[in-house]
Image (cartoon, rainbow, N blue to C red; front, top):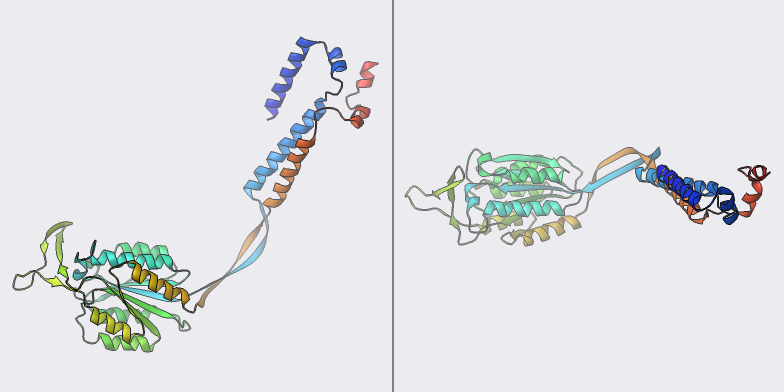
Length: 330
């Protein structure tokens, strides 16, 4: 800006010399002031400089902040047995279950979440955490190959879920089981009752159709046929809503049809939102105070001065004779 100003000033002086000599110009334009033009430039530069500093947002001093987190504990038990690969609902039961869990997690506030996967046995995919992004990331990798034995042992997931609730003061603890309900264990109802006695509400979500469908078999991602039984007949897996309904009733929860994603997502999200929240984390940290407003104020002040300053000499400035004009005339 200074370079441009000097170039313009040089161009003006050069053009003025072509028009008339300096003495004549002073008589023709007696109010012309190089000082006022320079002063306006200074105000403009100061104004823009302070605005730039305001954008940087300088911080000084410090203040102590206290952040409290409140929420409930929600553990998701995902069935990853081979029957969940059935494609009687699109794209398949397992992917539908993942979609449901992911959307519920996205709707949660500061609630803590954990993820269990199970088939013939259970496996802790993600411990209880407030990191919802990590939960979604681990969830995408859930598949039948992560569990050593196949089958559908819901009682294994229920037993493992007990270890997830590490906050004894938490009054609202939830377990959400997402499965096709093909349970092969007799003691599931008793385990669900024990969990309910410990204050855990058990909700179940059923995926799959009553008509059922075959279980696709793949090798290196390529379809090689459908699972067959000992007689060589194609196995048809069906959703068993009765088992899931019984577990939900015993667990003081509710059974929800999961074939339409919106049903369990909306219902469970509403339940979590209305549940009583417990404080489980309090943090204190120092934070610097923003000081940008001072620089912003000075920036606008100098810009306003630039607007209201005129390049012509003022009456009082003429009397000051900063450039010794009177002495020069003598």
